[in-house]
Length: 65
Figure (cartoon, rainbow, N blue to C red):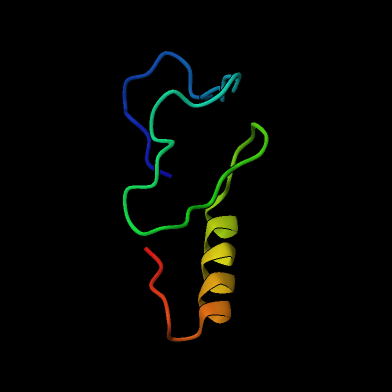
């Protein structure tokens, strides 16, 4: 894992997620979007699993980006 050389503490705390998103909550491309119903962290594996499930469901009719 990459890390800056000069930091006071090595451990990076995650902070907290409260309230609704103020920015980045509109669909820019296409018609449909994925929406989180509660606060939390989404891992890269979860995003990849959702992308694979969507492409499997749409077959060749749609585009996911």
